Length: 289
Image (tube, rainbow, N blue to C red):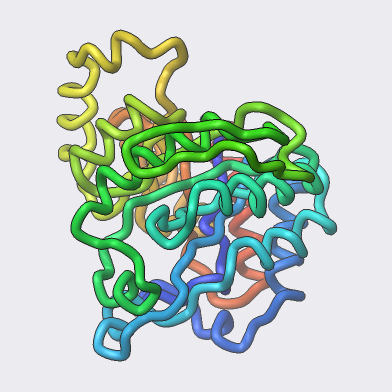
């Protein structure tokens, strides 16, 4: 099973971060990511929010580093670990903007981008950015199709329900014609979107029972039968403590696998950056056992 990390410092969700992260900067992020790469982890993540309303910050947190700037820095300091946007909010971007900006990141990183995409749910942020909210689901579906059609093309062309692209040049763009797309979300609709348009599903805020039931239903669908490749399922267990509780950690991994996980997005119990790096090392031992 592949394992990546939900990168510390880059977000600060309430009751879900260690105190040391609040004073940490890019040097600490770099140390963690370089260590994760050395230990063979598959990917690191960075989430997107432009601005969080004051009355929402207490529940969603207010710290969200920008994925493009952060990953551009980390791409120059690593060589193998993948860089997963977890997730970009589609409604905040024109699809050709994603193709150009993140295609450039994919090129300079040596094709290491995993494009995690989501529909978004924070209406106030949509309003702030003058982005359409009510039809965001249909608009997101069309945006994913447009990104697929235009990725890696200097002369992109697409015509869909919400976007039409023709007679423009995009240079530079990605050095490959396909990029892995993970769909984030917690609804059955997000899973259907992943099955129909993506390479993976990365749910959050759902129990293993809910995830397993949703996957069972999806496997019975015509869209699942029409897939040419298996669907990657990236699950995020509760914070793990592999150095102090390897048996409990192993049980959590087994439970995620039983629920359908093919990839893990890991968080750890940690009290310092040294402790976090120790947990990275201990987790590799658990996964190898």
